[in-house]
Image (cartoon, rainbow, N blue to C red; front, side, top):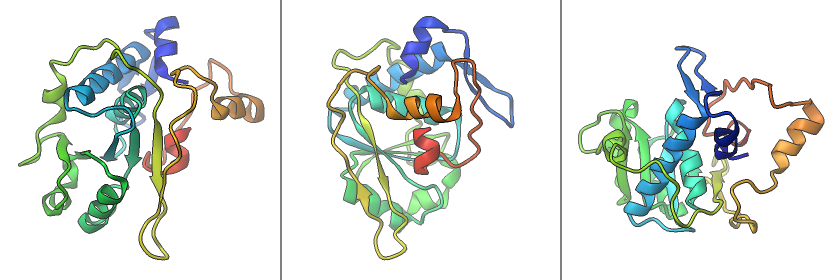
Length: 211
């Protein structure tokens, strides 16, 4: 369920609590951050059905970027931060990603990338504009043409090149449309509105990203 729903009903409730630092991000902050990123995507010419790539360590911003891309109707490719530059280049080219956002901590890997996609860094890295600065002047209100996007994930490539799984955008464009994972979590595992979910795995993997 998109965080804008919770932001309306309980804006100050924690959406994210970082286990190591204890940093707390409220649903209101998460929703506003996702709006800023959606606004930024439109300002850079990305439209419904376009693709971006995220090559990031686990961090609070990951959620803002994914939900922002989702509400902009994009395909968002979660790229493993443990891949080589050649492997990342291949996924960017194969997926048709027009933009890559990467963690500055990946250092030398970023320097070795050869793709021509727009580049932005979380943190400071030479030659990569900092995403935080680009988002600073973006409005935190919804874009005019919101519609639900979806992820695009890749296999590990152990039998050759990684293979992308590109499913169509959801038929229902509503951000608060039915979600099978929510229904599964409630029915099979007894999730309720007050539950806290622990997510220790890398968010570039399918299950952590979707849960």
